[in-house]
Length: 170
Length: 340
Image 1: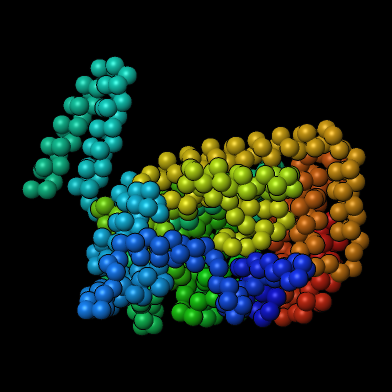
Image 2: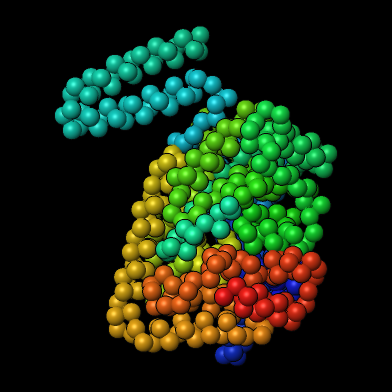
C-alpha cells in the first residue's frame, strides 16, 4: 500500500497515535515517518541493539583521551559511521572492526562462527576442514550411542580427509 | 506459469515459500560506500554472470536498470514480491535480473551487491532453496564473493552475516490473528531464532491476515538446519491456526458462514472499494473456500493472485497510467466483479 502522506512511496511503517483517547492509524514510508520523528523499523531496532552492545564495550571518553578515529583503510568507513548506520562499507571493514563485530555477532546472533555453505572458489582446503568438523561431531554421537563399528568407519574417514587436507595445503 | 498462477497458493495456510541469499562481491565497496562508476561496472559484471552465451538459463532472464523502470512498474514489482521497498526508496543506481516466471529475482546493489530471491508456491521451501543454491553457484562461477572462513558471507549489515539466508513462509492466519494469540507465538518462536511479521517485510501492518514467518539468525547453523527449524516452527503455527478454525466453526458455523458470504456479496457487487477493504474481504473469501464454508464456484484467478492484482501498482499498470485514489477504487471494484 502507498504512504498516506506522499502517495508516492510504499508504506513500510505503521504509526498508531493516541491523541486524547482517539486512536489514529497512519501508514507511512520511511521518509515521511522520519518527519514524525519516528524512524522505527527493524533496522532501527537492530541499531538500538548494536548501540547498547557497543556502548558497553567502548572505553569511557575522558578529557584527555583522543576521539575514536578508527576507520577502515580500504573504504574509509569510520567507527562512528558504523555505529550510526549499522552498515559496513567493504569486506575489509570486518577486519578493521573485528573485535566489536565478534561481540555484537555473538550477542545478537548467538554465535560468531559460520557453519553453513562455503563458496566453491574458497577451494578444497576449507571444504575439507568443514567436512572433517562434521564427521567429528558424527563420531562423537556414534561413540555416545555405542555404535563402535560406525565410529571406527568415521575415524578412518577423518584420517583420510586429514591426509588429503595436508596434501592440498602443501 | 508464474508461481502465483499455481493453484497450490490457495490450498492451505501456507501461500508461498521464499529463500533470500545476500552476497557481496569481494572487489567492490559495499553499497553504502560504492560510487556511481563502480556501481555501474559491478552491475554489468553481475548481469553478465547470468545473461551470457554460456548458460541455458540466460534467455529466461530479463535485466532492468532501476532508472528505466517507472514508479508504477516498480510498485507493481514490489506487490509481486520481486523487489523490496529498499530497492525503490534508495538513491543509488540498482539493477534487477528477473526470471520470466518470477520464480527467481536477483536485486543488484540494493542493501548488498547481489540479493538472490526464489519463490515457490505453497509449502515448497526445499525447492526454493535448491533453486537459490544453484543460482548462487552459477553467479559464483564468474564472480568472487566476499567471504571469511570464520564469519561466512560478508554482508552490509551484521544481521545477515554468515549464511546471508532469510528463509520464510508466507502464511494466511486469520483465526490466530483474531484470537490475539500472535504476540505469544512471536515470543515463543523467537527462542528458536524465528520471527513473524507483516506481509511486506519489516515494520508493516499485516494486510489480509497474511504474515511472514522467517529466521532472524543467519549464523551458527547451516542453511539446511535453519530451514528445518523454520519448517518445524511453521508446522506448529499451522496446527494452532487449524485447531482454532475447527473449534470456531464447530461453535459458530452460522456466524462465520454469514461473514464469508457477506464478503462475497460486497466483492461481487460493489462499485468502488479501497485496497484495505478489498484485502480484508478477499482474506475472508480465501478462508471460506479453504474451510468449505463458502460453497460457491471458485474464481478462475487464485485468490492470493487477486490480492496482488488489486494493489495500486497493478491497477495503474493495467490502466497504463497514474490514477487518483478514487479512480483506483473504482477500477479495483470493476476488476473484482469481473474476476468473480
